[in-house]
Amino acid sequence: MKILVINCGSSTLKFKLLALQTGGASVKEKRLAGGIVDKIGGRASIKFRAKQELQETRAVSDHGQASRLVLDWLAFSKLLEDRLDAVGHRVIHGGDQFSQPVLIDEEVINAIAGSSELAPLHNQPSLRAIRAMRERLGAEIPMVAVFDTAFHHTLPEIARRYAIPPELADKHHVRRYGFHGLAHRYMMERYATITNTPREQVKLITLQLGNGCSATAIAGGRSVDTSMGLTPLEGLIMGSRSGDVDPTLASFLAQREGVDVETAEDWLNTKSGLLGVSGRSRDMRELLDAEDKGDKMARLAIDMFCYRLKKYIGAYLATLDGADAVIFGGGIGENAPEVRQRILAGMDWLGLKLDNARNNATVGSEGRISADDTRVHAYVIPVDEALIIARDTFSLLKKTAP
Image (cartoon, rainbow, N blue to C red; front, top):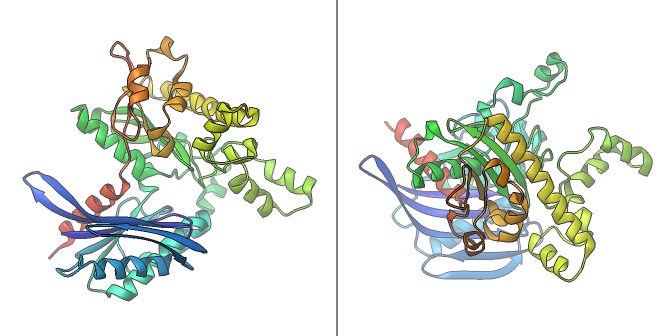
């Protein structure tokens, strides 16, 4: 089965074309093509790769146009000649309605649109891509929505609810939804595979660290707590998001600065975090370089980032009554050994001891970075969300096929 995976961010569209087939009890995947359209909404950077490559810069107005560019290039590269079997879409927010992958129809599209208020920067781009693909490919090519919030639908009530009146919460569907579910699920499943541990016995803390950051406590292979909440703003310090703050901060800043609350909330989402504290960048690589050159605010931003993570790891170790391992994924988690070292420094007392040589050698690759004689191990597992989406699409279509 040939499956095209579409993963929309607020200003990016990533894709992979995969061929999947069953091999005994397992599913085997082969990558045929992949790429990204970056900085959508302006002069976009386009990088597509298969047997031949495309690199160019051009104006791309929205994710619908980006989707059409992908289909045109795949057709030009003769990768769709023997039929495309399905398209799998990553959708950030599934609200209360979606805890499993679903076949996309008009009812599903309307439901995704209804959840857009909670993730406007992400659900709307996905909808534009879905509509463009349906218009271009027609109804005969099935499309599947795979939801980033679905993995966290297993949160117990004590972790899922906010301490507000239940009638308000239920009326307005207010709960902690969690995000980055595909990434956390991939790290859990991959850890189970490489350690030969049954998923129902896995007990982990998974860290997805990139421009957006989140932590998840996993017990029995299921999410039992996670750092993001109703929206992706809650939790860890991120590239441009503040993470946890006093709930009255937005209205306080709005009053003092003479702006509306929406503007103050936008500051917390787009002008805070690493960018806001450093006054320089949201890119960890740039901040580490600036710190080496003596920039005190860059150092403060990194220290705050690592401190917040250490607090969450400690809290989740308590929640889980200990863990098998801490897993690092995402751009920072996979490629910044110094940041990993600072996050885990001083945890020897609870049985988590880093092996510095392994840690420094593990950049953009998979491996254990903890010492042999430690009770709680640490791993780096590069995340492949596209693989999860393709597998879920394949599995759903196999179940629903005539």
